[in-house]
Structures are given as C-alpha cells and as structure tokens.
Image (cartoon, rainbow, N blue to C red):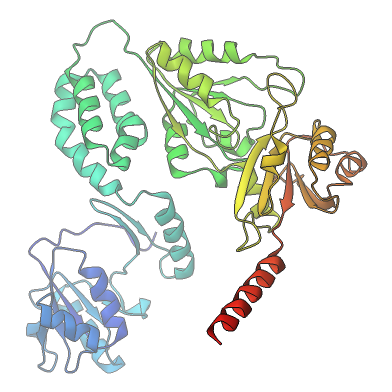
Length: 469
C-alpha cells in the first residue's frame, strides 16, 4: 500500500487552490463539501469560480504565487500551468504541507480518492492512480446502493447512543441497532414517518428489561420474478435485518444470497397441484416465529400484493396482534414484458392493463370476459398455462378476433427464459407445441383501431368546415 488512507480534520483550516480553469473548479466543488476555508490563487478565474467568489463561498488572491499564499494551509492543490505547478510542489514540500498536483501523480504527496458522501458517513475509494475509471465505477455502484439519507440516520443514531446504552442490555442493544440501521426502524425513518418512528423507539427503550419476550414483526417482501438485481433497496434492507426468512419455490438463489447469513431459513415452496405446505400452515409458522420476538420476512416471488395471497397473511397476523408491513416487488407482468422488449401500454392503441390469474381456490376464475376484453387493453395472465384452453374459448365466445396477437413469456428473467408470439386462435395449440410450463406470463393484446378515430375526426372536421362555410 503506497498511499495510506486517512481522514483529515478541516475544521477552521485553510486549503489553497492554485489555478483558474475547469480542473481548479472540480477540486473546489469537492472541497466546498467540507468546513474548510478555501483560498483561490488565480489571476483570471473562470465564470464558475467568479460566481463562488461573488457569493463569498471562497476567497481570492490575485498576486503572483508566493510562499505567503500557502504557509498557513493544511492542504494545497495545484491546477495551473506546468511551471507554476512545479513551483507550488517544491515550495509545499519545503514547508511540509501536503500537495496535490492535478493529473500528475508523481508530483503529489497525497491524492484525492473518489468519494461517496453521506455525511457523517464518508467512503473513500482509491486505486493509487492506477485505475481512476474503476474507482468511479465502484463509486457509482455504492451511490445507487446507499440511501441518500443514510447520513441523517447516522446523525440520529448519535443522539440516541447514550439512551440506548443506559436502557438496553447488550443482546437487546445489538438487536436495536440492527433494526435501527437496516430493519423496521430504518424503514420508518426513510419513509419519513417521524411520529411512528419516535413511538417505536420510545416503546423499545422505555420497556423494563424482563425475561418476557417482546412481540416480533412480519414483513412481506416481494423479491421480483428473477435474480437479485430486481430487488428494491427496501427489500434488501429487510433481508439483511431479518431473523427468519420464510421463502417460496420460485425464489432465485441469488436473492437468498442477499439474506443475513445467520438468519433462519424456512422453505415453504408449493409445487403445482402439490401444495405440500398449505397456506394455513404458513400462517401458523409466521405467527409462531413472530411470537418469539423475531423479525420474520415472508419472501415471495414477484409482488406479494399481486396474486401473492398477501391479504390472507395480513389479515391473519393482524387478527393475532402481530404487526406486519409489505415491501412491494417488481411484478412478473411488467418484468417479463421489459425482458423481451415489449411495452404494456402504447399511446392511443393500448391504454389499460388488466392483471388476471389463471387459477383460484375454486379452479377456473369466473371472469366477465365481455367487459374485460375491451379494445385498447392488454390482458396479462399469471400462471394461466393450464387454464389457457378455457380462457381462449371464453374470449372467442364473446367475439374477440381470432387474429388477436398473444405473447407468451416462460420463466421470465431467468437464464431459461423463452418467449414467442402467437394468436388467440392458436394459443392452446402453441402452448402444447412449445411444451410451455409455469411460471409463464400470457399477454393478450387487444389494440384499438386508431383508423376509426382518424375517420371520425376527419368526418367531424368536414362537418365543421361545412357549417362555417
């Protein structure tokens, strides 16, 4: 390690920047995030720097560069002409002041890393000048993964630290901070639910420490219909904070890799026509684990609110006094369409989407097909392979055109994904021919005939012209 990473206290300190162009402006933009006083040494600053000078954000020295400009500085940046940069470097080295000559690593006594700023949480990424593009890529990845209000959460933690240490024993203290930074308390904070957050913190911290176990919490988490990169940030926070993970058959292995390593995992997968674990048993399992005072995540493929039986689990937990919340996920209808490059709506042609499931507790669902199959609608059918012949028959019976286009996406968002197009007349035949199995999405695309609108508009315009003439 050639460069040792350190964090320098810049409170009430001065930093000098020598230069007038874009490179000097880039450094000053970053330095303005600190509490340091910034001194610019330049004969003719560019427009951005002039604006900062006019606002009083930085001070400006126009004299020819000399020792007095940097003798009282904590750090020095040189972003000027090569001959001036060399003078700055030599003088700073003589004075023992760390100096950075922009884009000249061999002339630097320190380098500025790529920074992810969630003040007071600051992450510095350095490659010792070998691969700055890689540092920026890592920075971009961290920027997307870390909540923008993470720093504010850290500030709040500082205000609670003494109270937590006083009120909670070590095991409960650890559980509190895990919940605070990545569990239920963190979710309340990021949602901006201040009153609920304060009430929950007060409830936890004001409880008398007894042998009685506190009641746990259940979170229904949508994992999306495929790999872990379809998870939301909120889903990821809950997976990393959960004590127990209750998961389904369709959960991708990469999603389970995102779970807390020491979390208890309980598989409750249901095979088609073989529900080895009934919904009632799953409800009882969630209740049993939550009553142990644990944070239980019910992990479901797709979105739990879309044919995920979330309603039954919500009602059951509330009936038994267990708090429960939902983290929505990317649902298969939108994800599979995106994966094959289709759109679910299209201006003028398709203005509505209807989500339907191909099965229910009583078998075929008795839909009102005449009122569903309207022009300008996409019917997105979940888990409908088995019932496709009946659905096809019903749609044709209410007058839907045999040539209506249909898109089938099998095992969407997975390496085994297949997709093909057919028509309503050939739907059942092609499902059998391609040996399609669930999970699969079937899209029936009932476009509006926009030519009718155009003819109507032309007729109305002609009538208007006739009246005006």
